[in-house]
Length: 190
Image 1 (tube, rainbow, N blue to C red):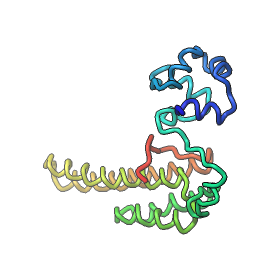
Image 2 (image 1 turned 90 degrees about the vertical axis):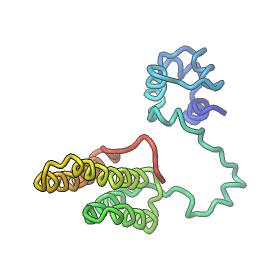
Image 3 (image 1 turned 180 degrees about the horizontal axis):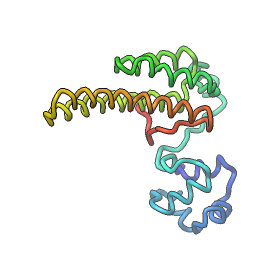
């Protein structure tokens, strides 16, 4: 089953209804469901009409789990409902360890598991911190190679730390307002 078809059926839409809603021809929808990957305007229009992110149409389709298989899945593997207070705590826990980069990943990861918030939002928080943890030393080393002096290096270090503080605080504000992240990746590293 194609990604589009799985999502379309999950939303209880026919090809014709999706065509009307997205202003994409039924024939194009049929081609995409047959295996052609949507691109550009078509991808954007379909994602918008299905109320999903564009990348979701490019990922593997959601797996259908039968009732027998569902009984075998442990309660730990099931995704718990999102508790936004816990999500905010997981996000803000990175703030405490901004100066100790490995801990700004491990502490939220431990909290994610202990608070049973193994959802895409918590994974995105940790993924953003992983990217920052990789990019911060690279940026710092590039600054050193420029040999612009000790003051520049100190200012660069402060800016790198402040960038992570800003990311964490901006995401916390967005979690409060819109129940989503402001800084997020189109993929998850977990």
